[in-house]
Image (cartoon, rainbow over all chains, first blue to last red; front, side):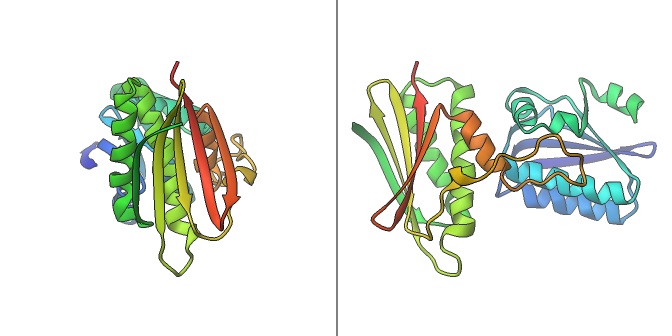
Length: 110
Length: 137
């Protein structure tokens, strides 16, 4: 798994590439916790290059979202594809998270 | 029933990819699509990680994964000698609660059920045997 971060205005845009599984998900959560503790409050997670996600990945997303909620922060997802879309659907994640087709749309939503 | 491959390794997260590689390769040889292989991998990860985390408590132990073929059924047996644990007895998670109430516990099992065509559990000779059944057609 590869994580790239960039900041646009006040928004952190996080792109995740590869697999978010039981082995790799903890490092996503660590990175996010670190950014939140540094005061970041608005996140867009771009999953266009994420090929695989398991419940361990979902857990790290949920943990991140809970931290953000306490600080009145926001998290949005963009460009989910194939298997990740399917897992989000099965897990009912679309009912708790907003997902946009493009990164620009997500930026406008936030 | 015709056994395609067997792998037995210590129940440790470090071995996750080795287990998954064997199952993916078998599934590929059986002509499954990449999408279906992905789903089988995901179901496998959920089952294995449960075992790594809970089966042996403070002790160590092995997991054995056996891929086999029964006519048009691709079968993956996941066997451990840990504490009796029937994952199928888990209640399905509440998929409607909001972020603060949402719990992840049970989601892995739910994914397993959704991504396989059938799933069976039995306890035999002090072993947990979890069986994934995947239709080839």
